[in-house]
Length: 122
Image 1 (tube, helix red, strand yellow):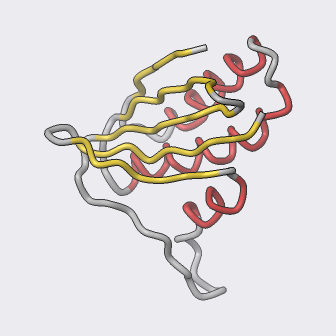
Image 2: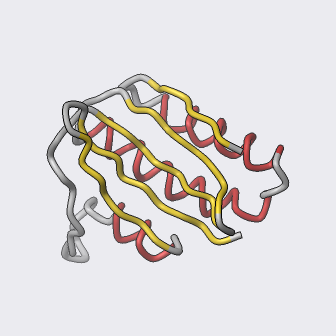
């Protein structure tokens, strides 16, 4: 499986991206990954919209016993893990991705922006 889809820089794109990925995972027999993929993808898509203020592309593929999901935006600012105080209402997205995913990372893309990705074990 190898698929890509572009989404606009709009809050409505977060559930659209999540549903697109969930449908694709289910169609390929990976229903067990849908909850974790949906959570992680929602966080990264929201970050692309809120912080990068950018449309984004989601790439999804399965290889080597894992499903790899990349969220690409056109902002070159690299996100980092934050450790917010308990009373702060935000700043936990990457912490959630790090806790749920088998692996995750960030790749800068010269001339385009960055990709924040995660992998889920099959």
